[in-house]
Length: 61
Image 1 (tube, rainbow, N blue to C red):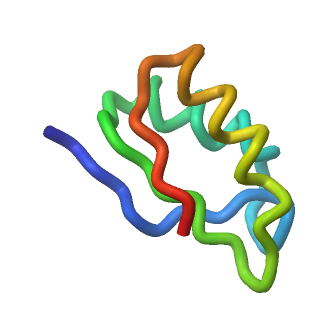
Image 2: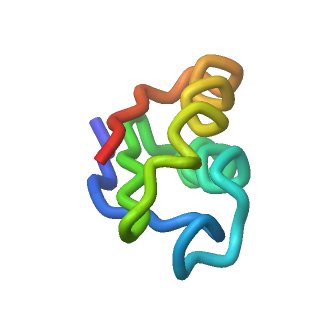
C-alpha cells in the first residue's frame, strides 16, 4: 500500500487544484492521500469527490 499523508493543493501553497492532487496521486500509484493545505479546509470536498472517482482513499488533514 502506497500512502502520502502530506500533500498541498492550490488552496494553499501547492500548484494543483484539490482534484488534481488526487488525480496525480492516483497516476503515481498511491492508494491513500491526505490533503493538508495550510490554514484551510476549502479543498476537502473537491478532493473527496475526486478520490471516489479515482478509487483513492482520502484523508482530510
